[in-house]
Length: 183
Image (cartoon, rainbow, N blue to C red; front, side):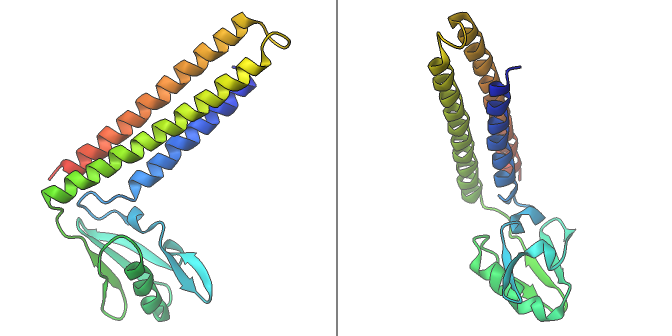
C-alpha cells in the first residue's frame, strides 16, 4: 500500500477511535465508569482526571462508587461532578461518593439515540473529508509524478478504504443505539 494511503487510513482510524471514545461516554441506562472520563478534579491546583484521584467501581448495575485516595478530595470530586454534564447528583457518606443512575425514560432514550446518530454522521463527514483531501492531493500529483492509471487505482483504493470505515461507523452507531433502546 502506498505511504500516502497509509497516512489517510491512519487519519480515518483516528476519526473512528474518537467516535468510539465519544460513544463510551454516553450512558445507556446502566452505570458505565466511562461517563466520568472527561471529568477533571482540582488536585492541589492541577486539573486531574477523576480516575487518577480515586478508585472507581460499579457495585451495582445502576451505581458508580468513587473511593478517593485522600478523604480531603471528596468535596472537590463532588464539585467536579456537579459542574459536569452527566446530570447526576453525587451523594457521599464521608468515605465514598455514590452516583445513582435513574432509569432512562423512553423519551430520553430516543434523544440519546439521536445524539449517537449525529455523532456517527459527524464521524462519517470527517472520514469523507479525509477522502476528499486525499483525492485532491493525488490529482495534484498527476502527469509528472505518476500516471493517470495509477491515480485511478489509488483513488479506487481510497474509496474502498472509505467504504470500510463508513461501514464500521454504521456498525458502532447501530450497536450503541440498540444498547440505549434496550430496556
